[in-house]
Image (cartoon, rainbow, N blue to C red; front, side):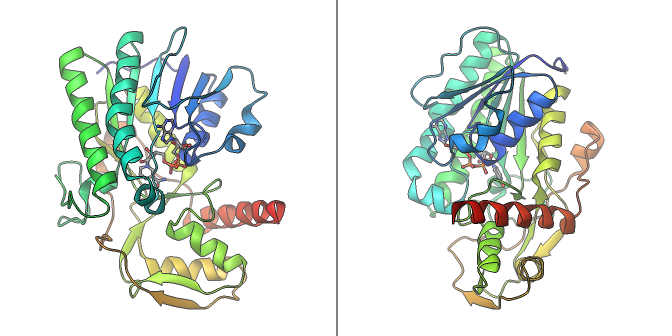
Length: 320
Ligand code: NAD
């Protein structure tokens, strides 16, 4: 395993998205130069507007399935471009498959041509509706390829195979991170994921819409913890896949109740129909991240939720 240098020039695809924007910021804080590539399909320039004046930051409007020409040296490629919320990838099925396939290959070629370390944003969705719990990296998953979520899950599974092939065939220094549900500032209020939906509903005093009876579980990680884990993987030279996520499991109903309390306690809970193929349980086994990367989440649920609610309250007030 070759450990990558601590700073240099990084390319972040999907750099104007939720996770990409936090990664760009953390890399700049660490002394990296950063080129963010984004076609603003599900992200927006506003997510990185606060970075525009920082030396070493560049935002380039580019569809990574069409072209990915970056001039100059590149030491690290973080491939994060892809619709990620179920609402987005159900609306954008072909774009999701293309960015996971063609986009991943273009990003891998860039890393190969520049001699850069490459990190692929994979997902806990590669485990599908898991039959092993919690999920270690050795679990192969339980995915329905022709179900509605297949476009996302299979794009990411194909991307993992492609990354592995480029490592073997071209010697690219690759890493794969399997990201579990993450929340925090800069999520979109209407992106359809549970936490931003609940917070938006709670701040408006509307009922929180919980899918099914809310007994399905999720393990949610605050974005700052996730970014620390991803950058630890990037620096380590570890090939992965490595799960990064918070192993503390909660039911969706518990998450909703906490959001009601954090947003002023005015909302009630309303139970709605459960989406097709919605996973029953989700919890990362983070042994590998702990032992290989020395990584553990540090931000408590209460603190992360409060920071996120405060950010949403300010953002919604600005847009009103
Ligand atoms: P996001 O939608 O906020 O960000 C994705 C970004 O990619 C957006 O800015 C979008 O405009 C951009 N993009 C999409 N297609 C593109 C293309 N063809 N060319 C250039 N840019 C393109 O989503 P996110 O939550 O920030 O997720 C980022 C990555 O992390 C995704 O690859 C996602 O699969 C992965 N991930 C996220 C989570 C999570 O909880 N947020 C969990 C698992 C995996």
